[in-house]
Length: 259
Image (cartoon, rainbow, N blue to C red; front, side, top):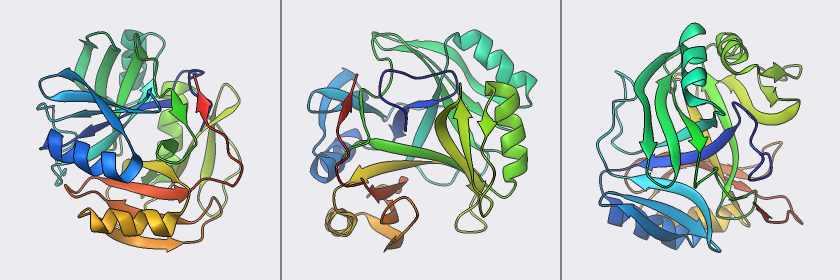
């Protein structure tokens, strides 16, 4: 993903875990990724690695992400917005909906919750004290985001209209999306087939097999993998509360990127 602290409009910049049990999530991700946590409210915290913010966790009630949402825990991908009100209007104009209107997150920024025409929820994030993830592309941090659905063409059309995405030529149904010419995310078909449309979060790991074994020992589950992919050895997993994400090997020699 792009270097931390240099997020163009529409680029995935921040991730939020909504979970029913905040202390339980802190124990799980602290053990899995070495995260530490800074409380930001009675039901919220910012996760850090080496002192840099990498994600937010909340157990506060939020608007339902979709009528078909079935898991009580989920990761939400947030797209960068330079002017949140204007970006929310662009989402509506492109055919999306705003489920929660823009609001302030004290000392961090402004955010909103949206859903695209395919039913995939996503957040909007206008940075303040927290510009977004300050450390990426290394073990235990965000390394990629992708939008998966039964209709990638419709997804590409929506995100082009709302955020100005440009696209490389599709390969096996998958497309690299670009913002301001720079790689932003992937868009492709639902995987496994029949999966509800959604954004999928990827976390880097030095050893996918070892990380997967650790996840199992912590009460998480493995849906597919580990196995080879064009981007590194990967596994689709869920944490001990059901939130889904991907573990993917960080390429050898990849250096930490901090804001």
